[in-house]
Amino acid sequence: MKPDTDIELAIDALGARGDGIAAFEGERVIVPFGAPGDRVKARLARDKEGRLFGRIRAILAPGSARAEPPCPHFGDHPAGGCGGCALQHLGAEAYRGWKRAQLEAALARHGIPADVIEPIAVSPPASRRRADLAASRKKEGVVLGFSARGSHRVVDLAECHVVRPSLAALFQPLRELLTPLMKPGDGAEARLAASDSGADLLLVTAIEIGLGARERIASFAARHDVARVARAHPKRPGVETLIEQRPVRVVLGGVPVPLPPGAFLQATAEGEAALAAFVCEAAAGARHVADLYAGIGAFTFPLAATGARVHAVDSGRAEMAAVERAARAAERNAVSVEPRDLEKRPLEADALGAFDAAIFDPPRAGAAAQAKQLAACKIGRVIAVSCNPGTFARDARLLLDGGFRLARVKPVDQFLWSTHLELAALFLR
Image (cartoon, rainbow, N blue to C red; front, side, top):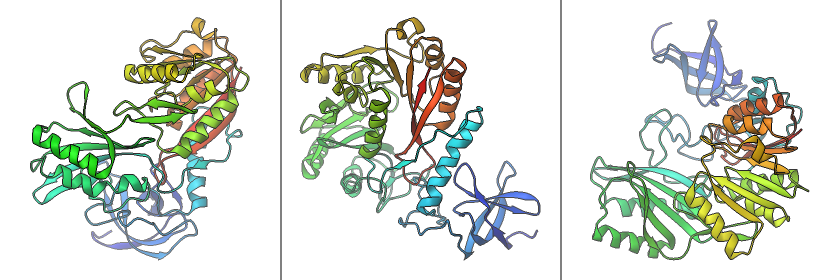
């Protein structure tokens, strides 16, 4: 076909990245921001890999799956829209159906039936309690936001419909703070978290922070009631607390737990509650539980509140120290901790035999080494929590081959309008 020619396409489905899928002259066409049932006018182009893309020029007839995106930064902007969301253009039913289909497909690739999947729990808009923002210093000031789709260019956010309003309110003050601290060309990350003590900020940057910068940061924290500001260097170990107005904590299972700077925190309180409720229900009756990849104890303390003895294991020494301090302060004598790199030294089958149940909540790469030990042990119950259906299905296959059956799967969507999906699952021997 001639270059720069618009053609008409019918969007048949959504691909794995949430893009519309159409067909033209026998070829598959990827149509970003297309929704199933849409009839669109699009301009075709090929990428470096030879894939055919269609850029929507006009929506001739919207499909029943389409919804009006709430955020002005979402979509096919000439300079590239915000890449933080991929699916704002879908209605609620189509959105939930697509996420479930991604989980079903991941299970199917490993020969696992999907008949035990429960209804998805979706966190509401404006509920995200952590955001990792990129900051880039331009001549005119600091640009702060998420990267554009398929690019390192930072989209300067005026608003955000996924993060908590208390965090979104800090976007402009952060620009004003960072502008005099950075030179044109400098970059930084601003990792925001909403703790139960208030906002927590970790700056990851190589810029020099001298006395004047520290004074500005202290003034920023006081003016905007930020509980703590810490700094990490992108290429050096360690974290330095620059200002702490009050101890930063999160309450887990009724226990205030110190939050180390930059420590992992479940993305939404609603998602964390859904996961913790599943874990406690699935582990009901277990007297001694191993909590593997425990982090700061998102499941450790809710389980301990049910009367179980819980052994928390994680490679993060700061996190394990926080769990230990919190347990001691709250007199939770049934909680024990073990700093241990489970990737290099998984808890072995013999040791696991001392527990009635085990939980494992690994990072996105999954826990193949630990899953093999779980499959080989005599434990009767294993509860998996995962932020990646693909690696979950791989690890689940190891458990199934080791004599377990998959009893329940609960999808939990903490990253609204993204392609990510979390879940919790129960395996019974």
